[in-house]
Length: 370
Image 1 (cartoon, helix red, strand yellow):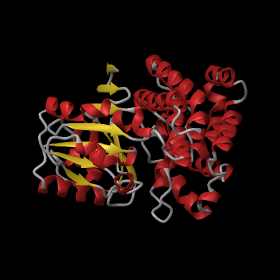
Image 2 (image 1 turned 180 degrees about the vertical axis):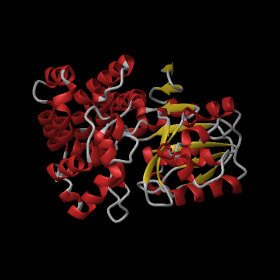
Image 3 (image 1 turned 30 degrees about the vertical axis):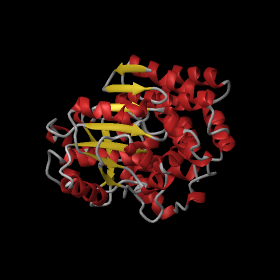
Image 4 (image 1 turned 45 degrees about the horizontal axis):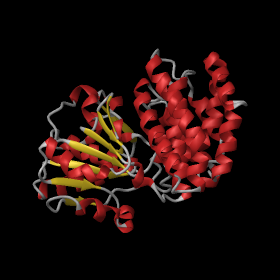
């Protein structure tokens, strides 16, 4: 077991979920809302987790694959009906982001668009909100230690609500909760974590500690993702992947880049409802090539680390773990690409890519990833 205080308090280790009631007591939470999804309910995990609590909690299980403002509002209604005084986000990044959205509404009036980073919302967010414990059940987004909630707003845009106040009170990271995760979901979420490490490392801002954390997360993900996909109960691989996700999000306080500037609007296409990690994986080789001319020594470091060109290494990893071959296979059309290219320019990750992209560049990146 380890207690880490970096951006927020982190309780990491196998079996730590058994401490949930203790941690809620420490935060003074007596009536928590559990924000999760129907898939986790069906596995029996939600019942297993809530059975250890002293009192029966309120539960919202309607989190969609890409969390929406409508779902946040529905969960907030359950929070109010249950007279709740705290939130436990239990699930993948979508459930954790939805929980953050509900938490925001415990101290702020809607709509959510006014709190997005692109709307200058960071100055409108204060800390007078309820406590939150984030319990990840996948190793991907790192939302448990992230300042952001990425939500599809009522206007249909997938945007980041970002503030230090959005950090969960406690991140409760138990690798046992990821044992037996299906290979496809392990692959997609794992590539999400690896993409965070890579994009943070490439981002142009000066932040050596973030770079160091990103490199360590990348090393853990690179050595273990194939094993985790092949054997869902590989203890060492599962621990590595949960730490890779954690470190990727610790590091991306520095900034992300073109991959995420594209995957946010791609993930907002309602008719497709695409998985964020899958999109990151598909786009990463092309974005690596796009950035090569400006990242200099960092490309050289990556080439030495992988033992080959970074774009080729990631493309080979994608193939080995069963990532779809390209955007076209996911249903993304030329017309969708043209719209996404315009939206990417407005995304908060656009400005932190080391090579500033134009709409034409974004369109070319997607075509090359098709």
